[in-house]
Structure formats: structure tokens, C-alpha cells
Image 1 (cartoon, helix red, strand yellow):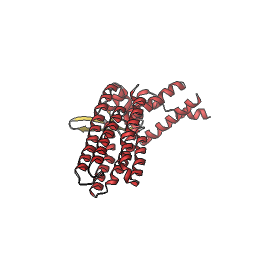
Image 2: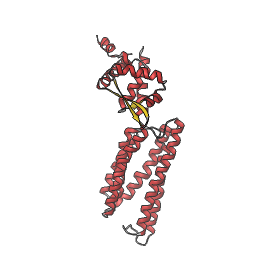
Image 3: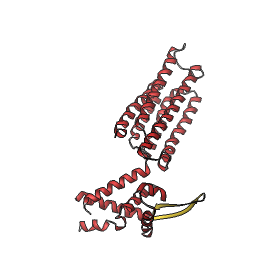
Image 4: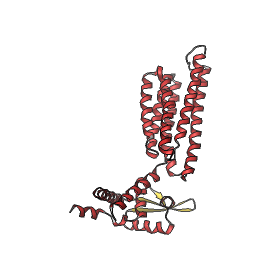
Length: 100
Length: 202
């Protein structure tokens, strides 16, 4: 029963290196823009865009589009739901490590 | 996925959290040099005062002005050295010198330091110059503790030590000079050396 509840806390939405990375960065920063995420994660534009879209769809991150001067700028931040789910996910990971 | 993959996940999460929120390219060597500047500066000031005709410091004397100038030179050289060596280290690590993390670090370090600097000047203008050595240590320590959240966390310990030394110095204004030498000179050398061997020589 306990094992079952840990597994249900492992969130499929975070089960990817890039998505895990996006959430990690946004957990400790008020917001991050597209280029900052790209540099830190070493991802391509298309790859990163598809993962941010997936997280946005799940309502885990918020996307704001704005202009800095003439340049368009997209910045991301976590939602309340995203923070709570990510914490649950990390707790589950840590429990699995302790058991293994 | 087995637990090895999960372990890798966790370490990657921690690494990204650090890299994205902290500026960790601070140079330990610049701490050592700042300490040496402080020691040389205070040695010159000490020598000037004891060889003067009075043998102690008065507020409107010429020697007092020279001492203030030495103090500013020590601060100025320390900042320049810190900037140059940190830029060099950041370049070596392939990190950007002026990004969100370093901006945050400079900003949060500067607030207590700037307020403390002004307050020290105010106290000085009121003639309570026995308090100034301790006040500099207290506010510098607070600046370090505040900045430690945005950089190498270890700098907070130097901050705590300087705050304690500063508080004792304001209680014993007659010995404030020696606490200043200990806090800014000796502690920087000890601390910078420790940082250098812990982080730089890898």
C-alpha cells in the first residue's frame, strides 16, 4: 500500500530531464525568460518550447509575453498548483531513493 | 527507472537550482588580497599615529584625514581586485559575469553596506569615532550574511564572525582598531585561503 502511494506521487508530467529542469529553475526564481532556460538547460528552441507548452497545459507554469523595447520576450513562472505538485514529486523521488 | 536514475534526477535538480539562483564564481584569492590590503593599511595608520607628536588620534587633525584616505584606498583596491579576479574566474568557468544571479548578489550585498557606510559617516561626524570600527564590522557582516543567499553559502560564516567582532568592538571602543584589524585583515586572509582551497583549486 505504501509503495503504491509513492508511485502515484511520481508525476508523469515531470518525468523528463528538460521538464524537471524547467521546474527546478522556476522553483528558486521568481521568473525566468526563454533564453535563460535555454542556456541553463542546453536545449534547442523547439525542444524547450514543446516542454514549456506541456507544463503550461497542465497549469503548472504561467507564461507571460511582453516586449522589452522592440524585442518580444517570453517569461515563465510557476503556478501554485505547479509548486505543490513539484514538491510532491520530489518527496516521492527521495522516498524511492531511501528505499532503493 | 531504478533508484540510480532518481538519484541522478535529484542531483540535477539541486545543481540547476544553485546555478540559476546563485553566483558562485567569487574568487577566494581576492579575499586574501583584501585582507592583506587591510593589514598594510592599518599598519601604516598605526605607525602614523604612534610616531605623531600626540601619539593618539584626534578628529580634525591631518593624520586623521590621511587615515580616512587609507581606509578609502583599502576599500577601493579591494573592490577592484575582487572584480578583476572574479571576472577571471567566471570566464574560466564559462559563466557570465553580469547576469540575473550576479546582479542580485551585488544588489543585496550593497544595501546593508551602503546604509552602514552612511551611518558610520554620521556617527563619525558626531565625534563618536570610537564606534566606527565596530560599526563597519557589523554592517559588513550583515552585508555578507544577506549576500550569502545569492552566492557561495559559506560567506555567511565570515559575516557572523564580523558581526560578533563588531559588537564587541563597539563595547570596547579603545580596542576597536584591533578588532578592525582582526575582522577585516586577519579574517579575510584566513577565510579567503579556506575558500581558495575549497572551491578554486579543483
